Image 1 (cartoon, rainbow, N blue to C red):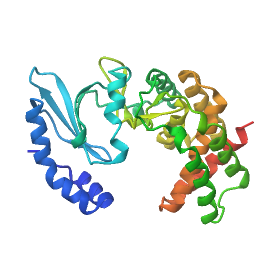
Image 2 (image 1 turned 90 degrees about the horizontal axis):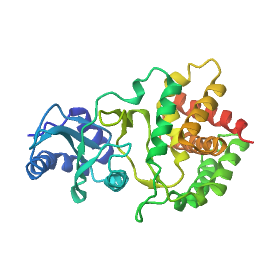
Image 3 (image 1 turned 90 degrees about the vertical axis):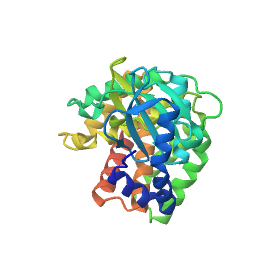
Image 4 (image 1 turned 60 degrees about the vertical axis):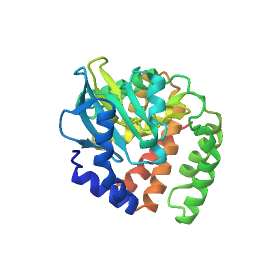
Length: 303
């Protein structure tokens, strides 16, 4: 019987309330049914992310895999679609899927992550090369990031006004310009959507494999900010934060074969969004201050 990690249970109930509590009650039986259906046996302790449990298993032929069961959430709908398109190219392989139950049987990767690489520039280069491999034509039916352009533009203006215009006008104007100029004309390219360092695992079949995609169609440069944020701790210790920011974005852009300025503009837009969202949702003051500072530094670099 599946043992649900206490931390995951608390996280789910805090975020989802009674719906989360009811789902957690059903989860052990649900996981047991999937294990029987896909002829798997547990093979290690249960781990978890923000919205799903991950059970190491072995299939009937002894092949290692993982059973992932997620809380039903719009952000997880297209995860198996992305895996199916990549078919193991730069990402773990999808072995089985049950979309109604938000469940997948996936190739098992290693436990090491890109977050453990001591050299941050090397990590950005690895992520850039991986982003390039994942940038394949997106199938119909995936959410198009370009369809959010107007929502992003209007949201920036409304949030800034409601929060008392906390950011300098030049910073907000640069983000608005990106939302108007770049966001509506994105390509139909499959984008991971949450490519942070902990979502890149060491693999045997390939050196690095992506997990937990959102499955968007859009500009691969969209993921640059997520990578920056996931290595924020060592970024903030750099002697010159502005130089370190631009160097890391340049390393990512070169490895991913993306335009450098467009990559900076996407990072600036998403940093401004994070700064406003953080104020609205109670992020720690130090984190909001970091977003403000980084957004200002990126704004100065945009020609």
